[in-house]
Image (cartoon, rainbow, N blue to C red; front, side):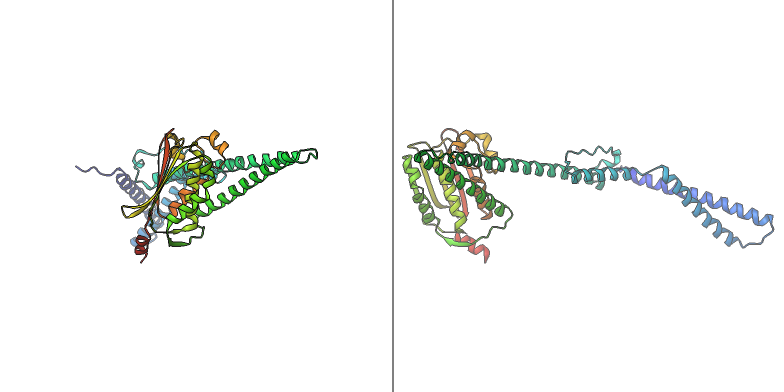
Length: 363
């Protein structure tokens, strides 16, 4: 048997009570007017007495309800005041709020609009708090990355003020200053590029081209680095074609190959593969380097994240490279995956659409 909704029952009861009280006022005014007209022997049409008593009853009922409303405020008015105060706190930067609003049992249904409003305010406070933490962490990371080269530049610049400093040391200090300046310039450039990519404001020049030739050029440009470590390269590049921004993709190849060279020990091995697979283009880069810990995978593409800070500080780098790689692949509607066995090596796999597939989808 279907139960009668409690809210409807309360509304009906209130309506009946309202009509009863209004009828009572109407009868009282009718009797009062009738007795006065009879006492003074005033002849008034009965219809007019009914109309006047009805109007007076309505006026008295409104007056009574207004007076009662001054002392009995609706609970929801207090609820909205609480929510309004919470929003003001968030506007001032305080996102650690908790709306402790005791709801009646019949209002605790998750589909109730008022309950959804309270939940939305809680969710908004949580998300804004998370954004604020990310912002503060970003500022802290940028400050840290900038402070380190600035300290070096400042220290060695002061050392160069010594007129008795040997020429060899002067040249060495000048080289360090130049290196740290280049590091600052690269950090600034990467931050601007990452911001533009995230805001989708970076200009995209999509063309059909052969990435195998581009990857070979990257490997040749990095030859001094991998040959100095006597690395063994296994290169298998098929002549495929993709539809992409060649400049952005060049940064992807350079960044990943540089990372592999950087973290692969002397006489290690790096494998580079490019081929067509399952209707898409697969780029795969494997190395026999230090690998990545499982707990670092979830943060791997975050800005400024460095899994092994002692190692990355020696090798250099700001922790922005993989963030930029991930964003470039995202804007190309591609996919990037990482697999690693800590202490044995890492494999990066990137899937991109073929040029002809991309062209067909746009036609």
